[in-house]
Length: 165
Image (cartoon, rainbow, N blue to C red; front, side, top):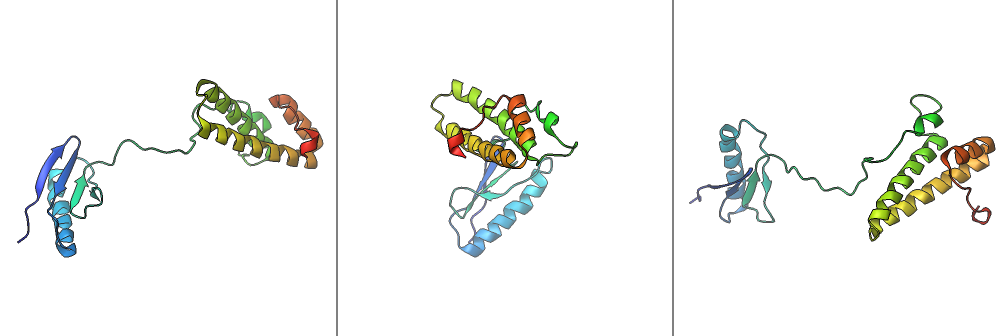
């Protein structure tokens, strides 16, 4: 005996429930749900995933619209001063360009932290950005002193302490 599929409509995702089945019957129910949905949901993409850890409950519908990510995407960062440091139109890796981009990120994080004083994760990110910028500044100082001084002056960065070299 194979239980019938029960369809519960939840806006905008439909949930198909199947009683607890063996592995083979669960796979058959999954295929049945796939084939029956092709006709029902032809106007939008169908995504079948298991709901929770239950092997016999599947969720269908469009992919979730809410994506949570802790990765920085560059929104709110003013990169208007970066092109002045590019050696060519496609330059994105030279030390001067990286320092200019990191300086813009420092400014953006500083404004964010003034509003959100207890955001310790962003504070840690700011420390990482400052450390990376300091490493690049020390490299630029050791390889090209005039360019180093030009970058410091035009970006308004104070030189690292002499004891930290």
